[in-house]
Image: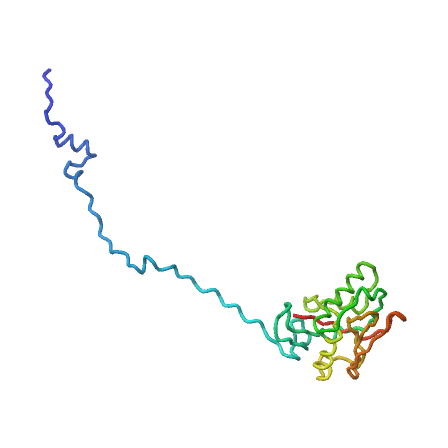
Length: 225
């Protein structure tokens, strides 16, 4: 059998189609046209993503003397700033007031100052010694430390100067239903335990070295915030 091959087989139209996936050589060789796109603007290239500003923190509420405090008591002191983590003093509601003794033996272990702001630390000293040595249940400092009002449990027995502000800003103004009676403070200096007579605002003390101060005086807790 006489078999012949075409000399220029690559140019054969049929073979060219087979070799180029069904495309003609002209079609295969033609470059793909690019779709024209608009150039990106400079602002689009370099502008930062837009983020919503963080919501502003609402200002802390302010109080004035005689206002109802966060725990439902009466605000009686404003020091004007938040140094130490607090600004105001609030007296507990009248329904929490009790009469109690401040009986204790180890007075030098609980010696405490009289200034505004000292009452909490003074009371803490009482509680530490109560837990270490026993006793103190239903005493003035114990009652204040155990008090919870409206979910707040940070009450304490006021210092002598804190009692003076209660006397001037609450009692003399007819606020908070304070009585014309003696109120225990948490101020203990050497062996002298101090209290305030709300009938006239006078400071008084008992020498605990002579005999345990078993007198039952008024107890009104306060808190700072």
